[in-house]
Amino acid sequence: MAQPPDITDTFVKEVDENLRRDRIRDFFKENSGWLVAGLIVFLAACGGIIWYQQHRQNRAEAEVEQIAQVYKDIGVGNTAKLPQQLDELSKSGSKAVRATALFTRAAYALQQNDTKTAIATYKTIGGDSSLPDAYRNAALIRETALEFDQLQPQQIVSRLEPLTKPGNPWFGSAGEMTALALIKQGKNQEAGQLFATIAKDKDVPQSARDRAVQIAGTLGVDASAALVAQAQ
Image 1 (cartoon, one colour):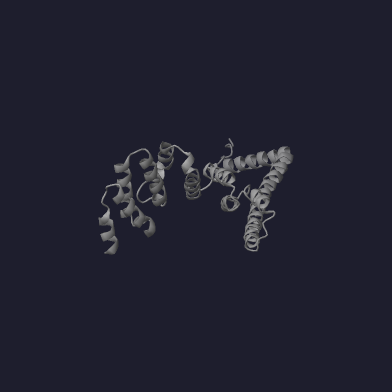
Image 2 (cartoon, rainbow, N blue to C red; image 1 turned 60 degrees about the vertical axis):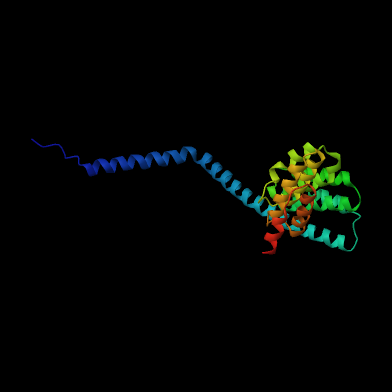
């Protein structure tokens, strides 16, 4: 009697492979429209991203040129449209352009004796969490210096507390204003100690250190050791 054919593993694999190819072919036939549409959307999205990045780069470059032109105009006294130009640049998506425009706007306001606008501009910089701390801290120092006589001493101490630490880039300025606020509170010894600390900090500008030594002495705190250290 004849024996049934031997169905080998190879034959089974070939059949299975054919079935898979048929399923894939049928899937593409049935869903070709969706697949093409999806590919178009994907390519459009990629193209949009590339265009947007290029657009931002081109815009930033144009804004930098505008900033440069603003400084040229300031140099020759052509400032009639300066506030409007800077206000527009202060809306830039570039952090550097935005910060530069705002600081320039504040400086121009001070030149025009418009302290109110300068303070408001510094507040805007300080309150912009998207800007680096270096910009925000610089704005805080300048804002506080302008408002110093209108603020309560404790407001100054609390506001500048994060910057009133040895090693902080703004320790000299923040420390001086904090010490003066402490004097207003009658805390002369504490103020004197702070001035002495400023005098010892080699990262603080020399003029500020010399001034700190003198003021500390008037408050009964001997900071002369700092002068000796400077001479060595």
